[in-house]
Length: 488
Image (cartoon, rainbow, N blue to C red; front, top):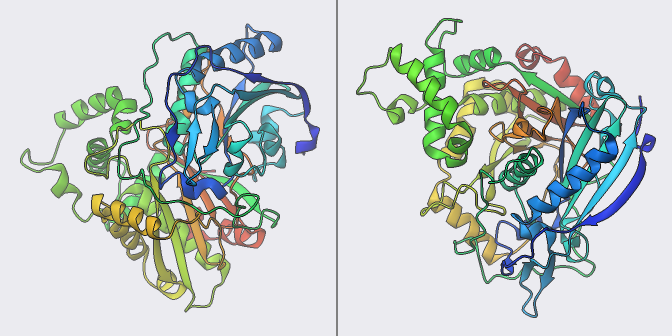
C-alpha cells in the first residue's frame, strides 16, 4: 500500500485575494479561543481527473479561483495578532494562503477507496500536519493542496480551527468550488459580525511557546469509514423508538417529520435543501396518514432522531470492545451548532466557531446492561436541553476559567463525535463532477474520535469515520449489534 512518503511536492506558492480587504480585525470568541490548542482542520475531496484540462492548466485555474474566493473570506488570508491586553484578533491583512501542487502518481483512486481501513497515504494530501491553531500568529490560516494521482485529483484544505468550525469550513469549500465552475455571484455570503454573547473580554493565558494538543499524537490508531444506508438507519431508528419497521411502513413519514424539525431549527440546512424539501413535503402531504391538526412538535415529542440512534449504537459497541470495568464512567461528547440555539439566533452563515461540546456520562455497566433506547435517550435529553440558556451558561463558565479545549480520550473511556451528516460535503463540484469521496487528514485524531459525514448518495445515508485503538477497532468489527447495520 502506498504511504504518505510516496508523494512529491512539485511547487508551493502564496495566493493572495484578488481584491484588498476592507474588513476590520475580528476578535476571537469564547468558541474560537478554546480551539487554539487544536490542530488545523484537514478535510478534502477525491475527484476523477478533469477530462479537458492538463494538470498545469488545472493548477493555474484553481489558484485563480482561490484568489477570487479569498476576497469573499478575508479572514482566511489574514494572521492572528495578540494585543497588549492579551486579546487575540484575526487581522485581515491580505498576507495570503499557501497553495501546494503535489504529485503521487503511484496512488490510484482504488488505492484510496478499496482498503477496509483508511490508508496512511491520505495524510500526505494535506499541508500543516500537526500544526496547532495558535501558530496562525505566524503561519497562514489556510493551505490548499492539490495532489495529482494516477487517475484522479485530491483537493485538500487545511484551515485554522480557531477561525472556523465545520459550518464555516464547508461554506468556504463550497464557495471555492462555485467560483471554480464559473459562478459569478456566490450563493452563501459569510457573515462576519462580532456582536453576540460569544464575544468576551475574558483573556486566555497562553503558555510560553503557545499551547499544545492535549492528546498523544503518536499512539497507534486504526481508522475505518463505516457506511450506513438509508434503509439501515430507518431500521435502527425504528428499533430505538420501539416501532415496527417495514419497507412500506410509515417510517418514511416519520423521517419527513424529523426532516421538518431539522428544517425549522437549522437555517443552513434550509439553505442547502429547500428545493429537495419542497418536493418531499409535496409528496408526503399527498399521501399523509397524519391528521392535519397534528404538529411537527407533538409528532416529534419523545422521538429519538436517526443520528442519536446511530451515536447510541456506536457508544455501546465501543464500550463493549474496550472491556471496561463496569463501574467506569464513559463519556460520549457531541459537538453541536449553536447558531440557531441562541436567542437572538446567529446568522446561519456566521463565520467562525459557534459550536459547543455536550458530554453525556454513563457507567459502562449502564451502557451495556440497559437497552439501545436508554443510551439514545441520554444523548437525546442532553441535546434537547442545549438551548439559549445552556449556551450562555457554557460561555459564562468558560469566561470564569478561560482554557483550551481538552481534546482527547484521557481516561480511556471517552468518545468525541464531530462534524455532521448535514454538512454539504458532496456539493463541491469544481467544474467536472462531485467528489467520489471525502477524507480527512491526521489532524485531531485519537482513540475514540468519530466524524460524521453524509453518504455520497445522499437521501439520509451516513458515513462514520471511526478512529480507535487497533484492538478496539477489531472488537467493533466483530460486534453483531453494530455490524448488522453497516453496509460497507
